[in-house]
Image (cartoon, rainbow, N blue to C red; front, side):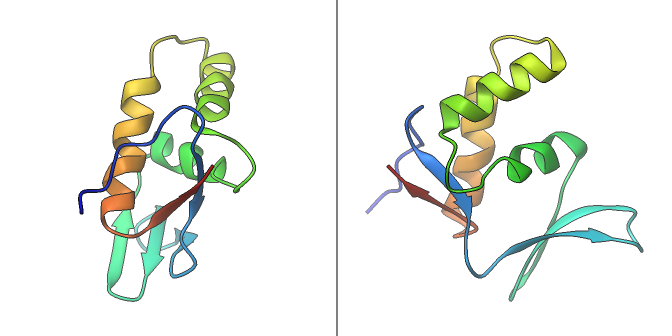
Length: 94
């Protein structure tokens, strides 16, 4: 079964096996999980901070667009989340 890309109404959250962490050695945020880690850039960190299990993908996009005065980032946010979901690091509710 192929994992579908998130919809604007999908509710992402960081999977139970993963956690957002600031790595002092790397001087950046990482997503830690039992098999390893994903080093995050500042944008990825901000997206994951908003993945609280209450906000939809659409809510996250609107928040970021308003915060940074940008438009048209939905595809990039969905792609980022989909990549992490394929690794089992992000899950979705509806």
